[in-house]
Amino acid sequence: GWPEPAYRHHENGTRSFGPDAAKKYGRVFKVKPGWLLGLDNVDSGPPPRSREEDRLVVNGSVEAGVWRASEYWDDERAFVIEGMPSPVPGAKRFGMVVVGRSMDDAYEPDTVLDCISIFDAAVKPQTGDHVIVECIRADGLRELTVKEYREENGRYWLVPRSSDPRFQPMEYGGPDHEHFGESEVRVVAFVIAAYPPRTLDLMRRMGMVHPR
Image (cartoon, rainbow, N blue to C red):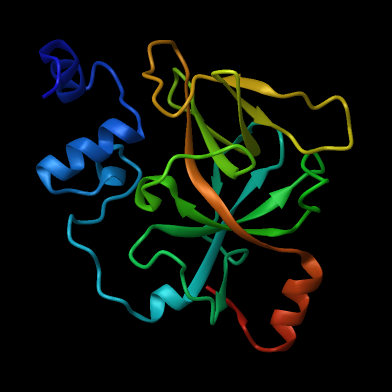
């Protein structure tokens, strides 16, 4: 059911494809869309529910509103919030700490964002969703940001929710956009919850936050 030239490009890796194509390929080949897109290395079967699904691992940071090189912690900064069941069992889930004030209308610095992979959530973003966006540069550098997603008159925008007018919306190719240029921009996760510093402090006092 795919045009042969497009399929050949996708199979050979000479052209990338988006979430919708990944979901279709995943159904046919019985693998997870996120695995096809190189976002995880999980197998194709749904994992059994375990204690791991009731904890949020916070092991990275994301700049609010502007691009910032991907930073994943593998040291004493990483921590775990216990007693937080995943709303999407089996989906890839991760926590990230907000850096900067360019989304200050929504998130103050040091807020923890609870995120679910868009490829496991199996729905497209809609106007108003807060999303984690990844930019893959030609040299392989990966950058992340958090933005508000908007659709207006057939155009797609990634919008910083900031009180500072220096931060402006950027146009985005959309969820079905196929990458042809030197840099690839794609939405990789939904923000499903946010825990500001005062909430994290309370969780720590309740014994819910532990070093990883």
